[in-house]
Each structure stands twice: as C-alpha cells, then as structure tokens.
Length: 226
Image (tube, rainbow, N blue to C red):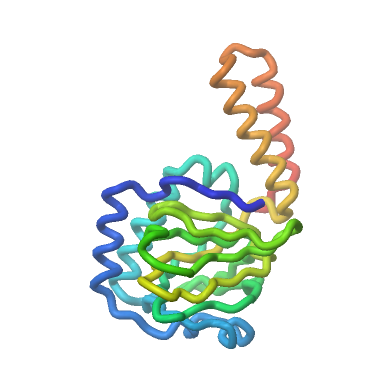
C-alpha cells in the first residue's frame, strides 16, 4: 500500500519546522546509512542528537498522533524518531531498499521496518527534480508532495530520490513497525476501516455498522503482534 496523507502538519507547525530547518547545522547524510545505502546516498542530514532535530521530532510526532488516517493505515506499534534531510546542487539517493531492522537511538530496543514515511517541508515549486520514485507491482510511482503532506509506503519497496537540480528539497524520513506485519492484511484492514467510517457518516443507524466493526476488531485481534 502506497498512501498519500494530506495536511499532516498544519500551517503553524510548518512555519516553526521551516524556521528550525533554516537555522540548523547539517552533516553528511551517510552517517545513518548501512553499507549498501551509503554507496547510493548523497545528501545532508540533521544530527540526531541536536536540539533542532529533537524539536522537529516533537512537532512531527505530535502531528502524527492526531492524524486519524495515519493510525488507520499504519497501525503503528513503534515509530523510529523522525530524521531530517535536505538535497540541493545535484544531490540524490540512488536505488536502494531500507534495512529491515533499525536500532532505536538511546535505547536497547530494535524496530522492524514495516513502513517507510517521507514528510515534505518544501513545496514542489521550491525545487527542481527530487522526485521520490517508489517501485511497486505496476512500476515506479513518482512522489513529490506539497509541504506538510506525507507518503507512507512498504519498506520492502525499492526506491530512490532523483537529483535535485535547483532549489532545496527538505524532508523528514522515518520508519515504523506496525501491529500488522503483512502489508496485504494491513491494507485490507485499512480499506475496511475506511468503509465503516463512510457508512457511519452516510447512514449512522445502519445495523451493519456494529457487525462490520466487530469483524474488523476480531481480525485485528487475530492478526496483530504485541
């Protein structure tokens, strides 16, 4: 499932985030890469231990916490603290696949990367190039979203960022472990949840709502990993 999540950040959050990004000190993006990704990666990244990154993490996580569609689609168990990168002057990230296991900084815990997330801070007109190309069954999908919007996609996907030939591309990127490991099951639960919400809005007293909600939660109970 590849999903465009609209308006994850509101206007005030976007202003605060852009101010923090503008005043931050950047480092080599390969610091957090594995061996394979480091060979393909050419960008800059905020140091994870810096105050700018920590402040931005709080903004992003608070926004995700109130975004109902994000929770419905991802069913997150653990979210890796968001990281932040920028591309300019021809920088790019070649084709790669995200590592399956990530260490959660400052803890002894690890996270299985079920879903990858890219949240945009720059509008498409702010930079040339810089498309996120995600491979799926039907070919490569090009993603370049408005500021404040986010794309959610399976971490098993091959993907790349094309060279930024003008302006600056600013994004947050992070991974999460879902309660539902299997992408197909997670997609079915999401479709069912969306259908239940639409039925509830259109015909609030329809007797099937309770029955369908029961099926949803029983499937979630059967498939979830705690």
